[in-house]
Image 1: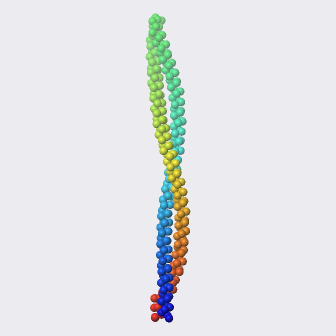
Image 2 (image 1 turned 135 degrees about the vertical axis):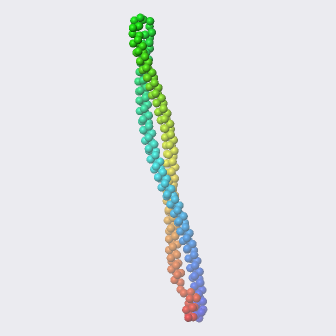
Image 3 (image 1 turned 60 degrees about the horizontal axis):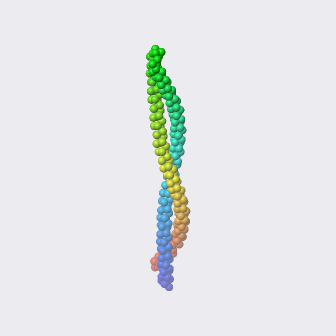
Length: 234
């Protein structure tokens, strides 16, 4: 009879509803899980990409610093070589001049020291010449001491700066090596993670497609037992 038929249909409705509820619940849970996984992967990828980009900028700056350092060191080397060459030449000239003055003084002092009456008339002029040569000798000695001090100071400063540059070069070269390696590793890891994310996205797309199918199937379920009974009793 009609009641028995409606009750049979109601059992079918209940079974269908249970199926729909189960499938919708499981699919929505899968959707939430896949969406969360993609968000997590995206956050990791973004962080890796940003870190890698920052490292690349730092490496570029370090390489620019190293190029500038190499240029500065080359200029220092050239200047030091020029200064040293000039020093060697000037020192040789001064020493030669000083030796000449000392020799002249020796000869004159010995000459006027002799007890020869013939020298008496010229002794005044001789003293003036000797006095002048002694001033020249003093000036030569002073100038020689000054260029030696200047050379020693310049050489010491050159050595100090060269060692400092060497330390900076070693440090920055290592930084370039480490940062480049980290950047390459990050690029590789982020690429692998993007591949994983594509797989998860494909799985999410499948879940969404299934959800759409279930919604169509379950949202278009026939009238429930209660709906049909109420309609028949009306």
